[in-house]
Amino acid sequence: MDPIELIEELNKILKSNRKLVEDVVLTGGATDYTNYMYLMGKLKSLDNVEQEFKEFLQKRRIQVE
Picture (tube, helix red, strand yellow):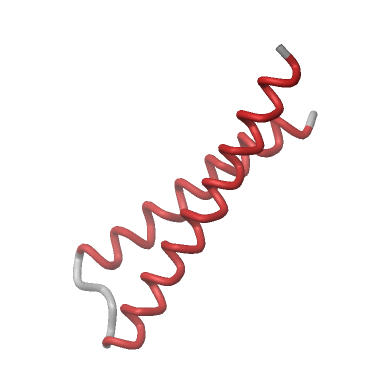
């Protein structure tokens, strides 16, 4: 598996994890404000990693093509 395929697979996992956390938040699954803030921080972290992957893939595809 080349690095780009690996990142694309990891990106799918990130999206799945983000969906799980979003579902907990949207259905009122946060037990308290601290838990809610933790979940929101987790969403922000997943978004940041996903953005880094997107930028990496864009740079690689531009250089390859």
